[in-house]
Length: 278
Image (cartoon, rainbow, N blue to C red; front, side, top):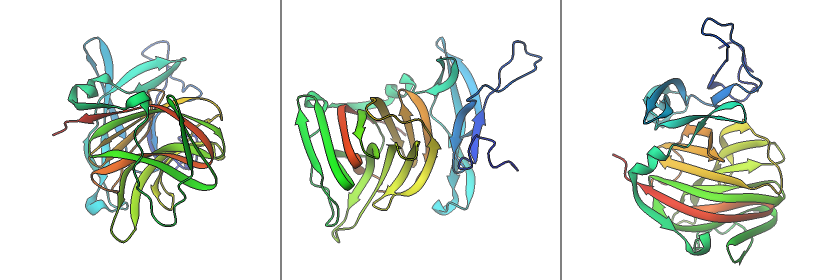
């Protein structure tokens, strides 16, 4: 508390950093990028590590909200385990295959591309979508568009490889719902090249739910994994945990989609693991 940029930027207000030393007694120094967890809101904190079956895992407390009120944060439940790994000289929290022991059903799509469903509202631009073998390309010039697909799930891991060829942003949407009045709600997680951030927002107005600085390159492939368990969403990029937050936006059990914002993007290797979570 008291330092608006203790996590390296003025946006993130809650998180965990680490320091290193050659000996237990210190002195300890923070590396150039010491962040393990970071969020704009009261989310992941108070980490504890545990050794299990030859690997090191971390669990942390997840913040929740009284009556789903963002201004009434409380200590919530324990997170799912994350594997602690050293990647390119940096300590990281990574997706743990332990979670897939809760897999109830694995959903693979032909050539890694799901069948599109109609899930649009009257003012939403559908964009242009074309599939060439195992690559799906979405294109839109002045707005954002989605490629929506089934099934409607509550607890799952959604994986996809994405690449923004040109334009502003590329991502995944989830918790999608459209009602009889042609109104919609959903959550999207996306990589934004203009702002150089990874962010989560509500649709259709892109009200920010969480955000972190992240170096995004046009033309580079990113493997995204989104886990949705109850009210909690996590985003992994190339297996590394980047976003983790509690969210009450969207349908409790909704459909999913691929998203492009003012540009051209490619998608491949889409798959879903439905989870059996008590």
